[in-house]
Image 1: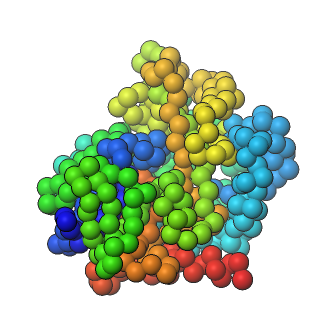
Image 2 (image 1 turned 90 degrees about the vertical axis):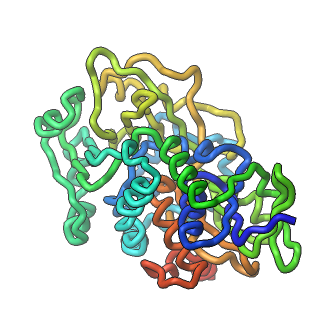
Length: 418
């Protein structure tokens, strides 16, 4: 029977980063996934390492926005009507967590992770010879109305108090930064400390190669075969059964497939999202990702082309794709930037793993010895993968963690429900 010190289930950016950090600490680690590193949820994102993040995405607070979403006229969100009864309790909890006091609480407890995000990526990228994928040009958020820009005052004030670098720009200054944009907006903020990634899949693969160079073992297997064979955990792989004393679950949207049979119930949901790559017409180009804040999409320059991301979709994880949001946002996107034809035949669809309070779980699993959780990173899997890897490796090896892990533990769900 083959054995390892630790099995990491899930080879996305989070699981791969966990595996690297554990291997760096001298443990024998096996990284197991049904596919290749970075080919799942980690592939589809705007490619931004958001060390500047303050507030998470929140439930809409104004009736006009809610009405547009309800009528399926908003590019910010779509939903499958038959799925609403299933997601309703989670949405209610999400709305409660979006109250101003709760958002401020989340901003404070998440700051240590975000503060380390860029540095941890830079360290892994240097070790993995992957610095070529990182752009230190920040990212640009655009606001088409004065009202939307004025609504940023709380966030910008908090950013100043936390020392998070940003530069508010008028339209002319933003166009000087990105000359290919059309002047259809009024204000912008350049978050200068953010780093963007030109190919998230290649970056994750580079981290996986670094894991292999450290002696790590990558195997094909199904996480759902995990079971207890005392005193070990066992997973079936293409190379046979593998045992380990500790297992880290980093399965992204597939988390419930494994935890439910183990009797672990968590307030978990997925936000589906789409992207598609487009060519740029003429000599148009972008030097950094650009967010059209009021229309909920991002234009991100990638090696494959200009990646256009959509807002969220509330639907069953495995339901057929319904990429209707492209029809809602493409007119605005094409008015802003000279998008050409799609590069792929079909849009990409993925699912973001989310808890209602927008915090991940980075902790020992309740009631199961040797089981650890690194999951629920919502919109920030790429951003927080390496920081999560470092934190959970410190917890598992008894080292002093770089920040207080308590806010990312499962006890918060018990507390909120009592």
